[in-house]
Amino acid sequence: MITKKELRHIVKLARLSLTKNEEERFQKELSSILNYVEKLKEIDVARVEPTSHPFGVENVMREDLPGEVFKENLAGQAKKLLELAPETRDGYLKVRSIFEIN
Amino acid sequence: MELTNLTIAQIHQGLIKKDFSASELCKTFLDRIKEKNKEIFAFLQICEDSALAKAKEIDDMISAGQEVPILAGIPSAIKDNILVEGVRCTASSRILEDYTAPDDATVVKKLKNQGVVILGKTNLDEFAMGSSTENSAFGPTRNPFDLARVPGGSSGGSAAAVAARLSVFALGSDTGGSIRQPSSFCGVVGLKPTYGAVSRYGLIAFASSLDQIGPLARTVEDCQIVFKAIKGKDEMDSTSVESSQKRQAPSEKLNLKKIKIGVPKEYFIKGINPEVEKVIKLAIKKYEEMGAYVREISLPHTEYALPCYYLIACPEASANLARYDGIKYGFTANSKFQKPDAKLLDVYLESRGEGFGAEVRRRIILGTYALSAGYYQAYYLRAQKIRTLIKNDFEKAFKKVDLIFAPVSPFLPFKIGERIDNPLSMYLSDAYTVAVNLVGVPALSLPVGKAENLPVGLQIIGKPFEEDKILEMGKLYARHWKLS
Image (cartoon, rainbow over all chains, first blue to last red; front, side):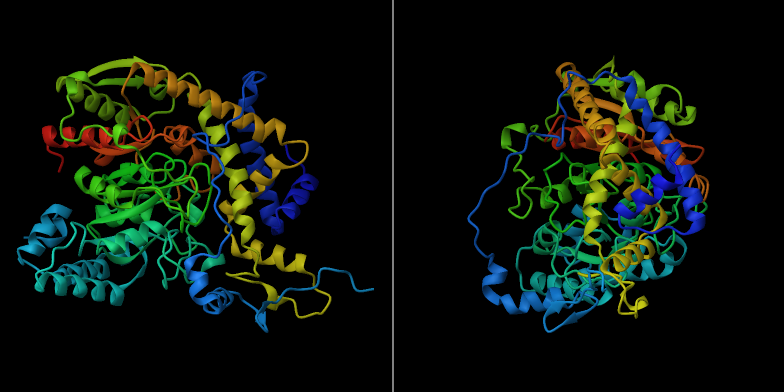
């Protein structure tokens, strides 16, 4: 069973928030899911290599050059992306402070 | 002639013979959507103006005597986790409710170049996480066969749109069964291509080592035409590959007498609905009657595929969904914090807490847990090792047989609300589809009959890049047993 303290720690790591009711519910549900995946411990995997990808992938290298869209209209592209942001100022994304004010 | 019943080839003939115009066809589908979408809710959004403009463009080309591709003027529906430039793309999430796609996905670009008409965007479980389309922030889609039941998921909107003849074909995405399971539940044909066969550029990422885009249609032939149009290497997706010519089965000349079909015994044990089992066994028997050699095989690690899948998909999702921060795009809770001492962290926690639905948060939490210090080896790394064992099972089996036949889902389409309150019971509906994603092989969901008046799909699994072989097998069934 996952404890409330553990759950709160993970929720913060995941940059999420839960309501009080959800905390109760998630604690139960996550515990039952974790209990279910315990099944994987039945198998001895000491000599097995992990698979991260269905087929062996290799790095795909290319010259670090701007693509066509950026060559043509860098300002236009940047504007298009900035327009998607909830808050901007002077062509920058606006964020809250990250340091404590003493 | 009912325009909404035609196949792609029939529409193409009709258009070039001028029996009807692309505009007429488009209007017919738009009218039908307006009539039916209220009860089925397959579409989140209709692109009426751009659809009619594209149809007119195709009509002008035909009038001018120009040759047009087979997909020109064909009405389609796109799952709302695939970007269409200038059109809202929500992934059925509040966090992307007002997000307008700045670019086309590669698959969309390819379809547009073929002259395809995009009717609208279809409903899904939020971020493709679910098996019933009930996890959509905008409401559930209903199964056209029985409105009290789910269409499956996560591509439930796409499957319901095709089944209800609201579109000729649709695109979906499949991370653990999200094309095949709704195809089975709605009685349509759905293809999950080999990992890497189709570019993922412009698909909103869920689990990057598992995600694939694929077609859903009413006939195998239609699925094949769409697959041919969307596949291929793309420089915008470094995991995409060009399937080499020699890997392709010679089309139309599949000799069934030389085909060996393996039926994994582990897919017919506890948990399967006996009515589903009957329909699947009968379909396999029909292939035997047509001349195929059928034998029982074993995929010994089958029972570990589902827990393995969740311990790989959720960690990948927790990393992929970190980009929704309430700052770059999408929903933000920033305005809630007027006080100057509010911190960036508060904005993250509130934006993501409010923007993501319950199932998405559940999976991000599970994924974060499985990757966190002290648990990484016990969960994530162990799952990756078991993924190797599951892959070995399939590689061994494919040395003995050409194709693997199995049910798509152990269940029939269930009632709306029946499983939504128990996440684990919902996950079980993907027990027979997730292994295919872990291994990366292609698989087709083929409607082969009904049980309790609800559709049942047969899963035909092939070797990597042998989509043509599984599609030809599907066609043989349809030809011999006249699927309606």
